[in-house]
Length: 333
Ligand SMILES: NC(=O)C1=CN([C@@H]2O[C@H](COP(=O)(O)OP(=O)(O)OC[C@H]3O[C@@H](n4cnc5c(N)ncnc54)[C@H](OP(=O)(O)O)[C@@H]3O)[C@@H](O)[C@H]2O)C=CC1
Ligand SMILES: O=C(CO)COP(=O)(O)O
Image 1: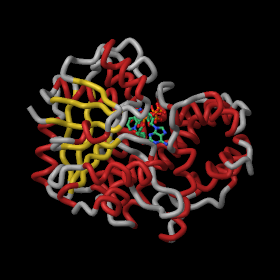
Image 2: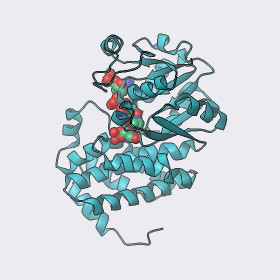
Image 3: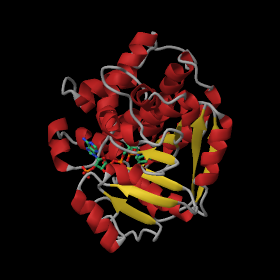
Image 4: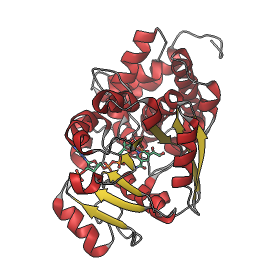
């Protein structure tokens, strides 16, 4: 049995622990709060993030970083993107030197504009053959209920991607391999921003023509930036691109879509933050993706307008009007 350490016990870390256990691994789930680790061990449920879901016996929890990492061949990282650097700096000295680091995160760091795999490389010094990402249409409550779903595991070293594919292929979870780490990460981070815009349209009471238009132009915007940075265009048409975009933009389970819906209904960003403990990555990554697009010389109207609404400089209604009023152009430009 392979020992896998999962950091940390939020919605996705917990649901993915169940996948890994179903696939035959020995899983140690690290929880930031000791009382949550104790609750998981005594009830085999995570009452804060996946209530009502029974975790398999091969999932145990701990608050002890060294204990979680000792002997772990694979370390799964599922923290909020903006805290990863600080978290990993603390954890890195205890990570086994040959272990593989698998990122589940969907964000871009503010300030540095780095993707999560880049932050991992910088903090741990691991080479690309030890860094992988998993991304796809994987809303955690559905995964935790073992509803069938597919995903992409990407690593520049295809053999490592295949090893991780075997590691997380369970009866309900089907991973595909890829070597396009950048494409998968940008697809995952950008769909959150598009999810916010779609949520705003829903909150304003608009229907499927509006949301389909924003989704489609969102995919064009994602592909424009990702391809300018070297991604494979087919990645954006796949599970980590279109697949995740569709899941996020169509599901009330998406925290990003829900966040956008609340903005569309007139709540402020601060009011929304106060109403939930869960992370909506797009609310931060809209700024970093916009800055990345500007630095790359790519037009990013959705990121630009979402960033303005999140920052309180524009209303959701004005955003939708501005989308329609923009200078007209050819669809494929
Ligand atoms: N949920 C989903 O469906 C999916 C999520 N993802 C991605 O996975 C990543 C994690 O998301 P998710 O699990 O949903 O997030 P949640 O909001 O559900 O959980 C966040 C986790 O991070 C911990 N945390 C919060 N703040 C800090 C901090 N400052 N330092 C260390 N840990 C912290 C929380 O601990 P505590 O409880 O103690 O606050 C909790 O364990 C995100 O990048 C997200 O985009 C990707 C695919 C699916
Ligand atoms: O990434 C996800 C689904 O693939 C989860 O989306 P949210 O973070 O918007 O809930």
